[in-house]
Image (tube, rainbow, N blue to C red):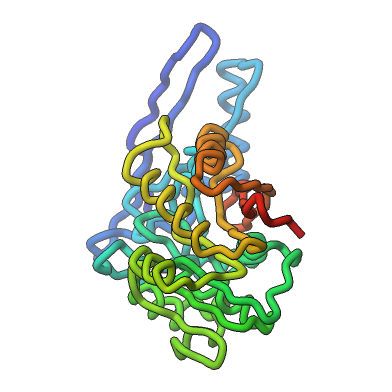
Length: 320
């Protein structure tokens, strides 16, 4: 059984009224009860709306879905521009705290298994649009080329690029826990591409990418493509702080490793986070190595928002 605990009317202006209904389901023997579906279905809600309209005669009456508290599975994650999304997660496939972050994989009937790092959605098995966008959406020819992937522990970029017959791919991912979880639970993304961390034309290095990049610079090593899948552009009010310093360092090191005709690809942030995107573009304009760039907006299914991706090249090179 379930019962209503309270009904609260709140007035916010002379012509705006909110009615909030709160109820509690009968608890089970589990320490944390699992909530399955709303107490009122669509027909019940429509009937309730009609009764409210008979009493209050509002010019407009709108119903909102319920917010569930205390459920076994937390389905609420805000978008990058702070809109609340209720996902359809039905189980936690994997969760562990690594040395670097909380690693979680949730299952969604719509999107498949979804990787979530420190509460931030990274990639779901439905999100091939993300992987294609961060590798150029088919504009690039990777055949016979040297590629450096920064991050990408879900294995999606590595798997897609291995199909393109590159000369060699080096992927540097810091978190072994993410790799192991992806190999077992994100097969729809990485397939078999990380079953072995080294193959004929690729190698996955589990390490911090910064010392590796500095080592490559000292050795004079260069790449045709560098794909940065480490983190999204930070959403801050000013382009400074540890996150921006890290981002600027990665950009600077990448430009030193990029061939004169090479390309650098990275994700940006949500299309609605215009100030963060503008600050990132200002960072690009202040690099020691002058660069040009283009960007595109892509719909990533599980993100439920448009996402910006950047393509960057040195000014002494030319975009294809």
